[in-house]
Each structure stands twice: as structure tokens, then as C-alpha cells.
Image 1 (cartoon, helix red, strand yellow):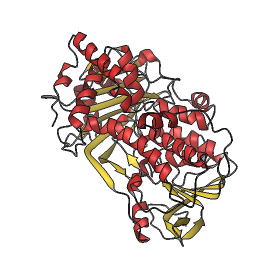
Image 2: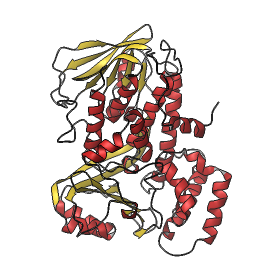
Image 3: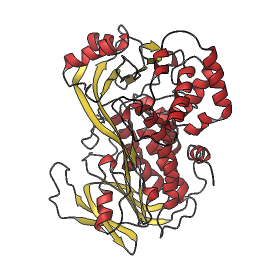
Image 4: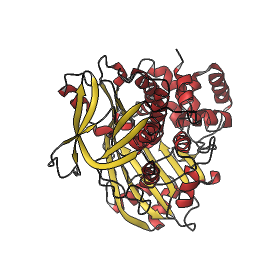
Length: 488
């Protein structure tokens, strides 16, 4: 059995399958977000026909003008990071994607204009966004629109407007999907439901997926759900880029939990149409509002000067928008002993994490890689997709470990603490603190935080010895308060 690090490395490969085979007739994908679109792209190599059922009326699927947030993606108006792992997978499935994105307006951040602040002090080495390729910076609607246009060009993929209502299961295998054609999610299911026949079904319905209830309707168990309460609220505003105010391309600011320090996170990203998108986030009762005055005040009071400069002097485009996420959650499909054949889940329908770490699109792209690996290995489609969910578990475990180890340090989060949390958190803190001034440790940490490598790679003896020696040599003020964070 391969180690999680090895499985993760194999899923991160960027080579296309040599000769993918058609192994099914019709596949149906429930949801046309990034996760669903990527799954549809993979399925186009293995199915005669792929149907995407999307509840939002997205108009002409190939339209790449006027990118706007969709109602079905409530966080779509906020800062999104396309981590290097996600970008590499997009390039894998859509060759030339990066060039097209740049030609259409995406920003390639200048490494000199990328800054990472911890407790108000700029780290010497920022998180490396350009590992194994250039970074791309853009809004979520822009990226999703480009991917949707690419998928719409595939001859055997068809996108329809409708709302999924349930599964058809016969003899232990999914045979179709019930849906209401052309139904707006806000209008309710008023149309006559139809059944879309399917040999294979992908749940890409996101955090609000109703798959567990649909399985229960057929007397099947729902996947166990694990939650990590984070009580996160963030506010976002768009600004016209102005070189007279700042040359910043990307900024990430963390206030780590410590005595006398309230945990907060902020981000600035240069995006298409010569704009900045800026986010400020708080936890528990520290909730940013939609009031412009509150947004500007928080930027100046709680974050490095560049945040306040843009908020006070920049031209705000539109209103401040907010988003609240009560928890991170995961559905452990791998733990089910009964699951119908021909059914998988991808993206947030499997797991959604604290969004400030930017793992969502990258995790969805690795789920697509897992789907490709599964379908290329002569799968027994008449049996549950256990091999697929085993690979996805590795991806989810990696992202979950990275995000929840940090979230468990928040004072309002009281568990659940995984076995060995004290040790894991202590080692993570050691590597994080020393990587601020150590190029090699920063590179290794960046590989994990940008989802190019499994977190277990940081636990190798040579890495830990390097970090311990670097800590002994490390001197100077700046982020020392983070060394004192308390563990349970």
C-alpha cells in the first residue's frame, strides 16, 4: 500500500493519460462549479456523453464576457486563491489555460510585489506562489467562466439548467437523476421532475449537497460528517488599482492568536480589469460588517499599512460584501460500508475547509485527478467506487490537517482535537516560525500550503533537524509572540 505522501504525489502529476478509454455511456454531473466542471472534463475522456445539471441559469456556457458571481456560489464575490497545484491541474486538462487567462486579463504577480505579514511584520520570505510555474491572480467568476467555456467546447459535454431532486437506484447501482428542468433554486421546485438516465453520477453540489438525504431515501447510510466550528466572517471590497497608492500584487496578513492579540486574516489580490480585491476576516464575535466605514476602519486599525492606504485612498467599486461560514466540514464517504455503484462526490460536497487558506479550487482539481486515476485503472463500475474515495481521502486528510491544525489554535475553537495534536501543532509552529528567515524551509512549507506536497513531507527527520537548527540560530523581533501560543 502506498503512503499518503506517495498517493498525493501521484495525484499531483501533470501528465495527461496516454490513451483514456470510453468505459461508460452517459455520465451526469450535479453542479457546474469548478469541481463539477473539472469532473466533467475528466469524464469527457471516458463517457460517450456527459450532462452537467446546473441550478443557476448561467446563460451561454461559452460566453467569456462580463464574469459575474453566481447565486449558487455565495462566496464567489470574495478573494479566491488559485494555488499552484490547482493551476497546474487546470493546465493539465486545458492546455494553454494560463496563457488564455493572462490574455483575457488575469494578473501574473510580480514576486517582488508579493508580501506576507505575520502579526504586523513582513516575513523575509513570502509564501512561494510560483513553484513549478507562474502564478495567476483573478476573481473566482473569471476563472470559473474560462473553465466553463473550455468545457462547453467539448463535443460530448452538454450543460443544462435545472435542479437535481434525487437519485434513481436499481440493484445497488445508480441509474439516473431526477431533476426539475429550468428551475431557479429561489423559485422552488415547481416544474414536473424528469429523470436523466445515467451510468455514472457525480455529486458536485457543494457544502449544501443533499446526497446524504437521497441515500437515506433508498435505505442506504449517509456518509459520516465531521465538523470543525470556525465561526468565520469576512468582508470584501473591490478597488481600482492605483500605482500612486501601492505597487502590491498579492498581500496576505495574519494576526496569530496569542495573549493580547486577536486572530484576524486579510488579503489583497490584483485581479483582472485593473482592480484590487481586498478581504478582511474575523472570528467568532469579531464580525466585519457591510458598512464601508467599518471596513475602512478595520483595514487601517487591524492590518498592515497597505490595507488602510487602499481602503482610505482607493476608489471602491461597488459595495462591501460579507460571507459567514460556521464550520469546516467533511463527509467521510470512505467510511461507508454500503454505497451504490456509479456514484462519487467531488469538491465541497466531500469537504470544505476554512476558506481563508485558499484550498477549495486546488482540492477540487486533485479530486478530478483522482477521478482520472480511477477511470484509467479498468474500474469495476458495477461496484462502489471505493478506490476513488480512498484517493480522495488522502487529498481531504492533507487539506484538513493543514487548515484545522491552525484553526484549533483559535481561542473560540475547542476541538475536536485529533490524536497527537499537541505534537503536530508544535512541529508545525516550529517550521512556520523558522521558515520566515530560511529559504529552504520556506520552499518546503510552501509546497505543502500550496497543495503541491502532502503535510507528512514536513515530518521527515531531515526537515525537522533543519528546522530545529534554524530555530536555535534565529534571532530578532517580529513574530516571536506566535511562539507562545498555548496548546491544549
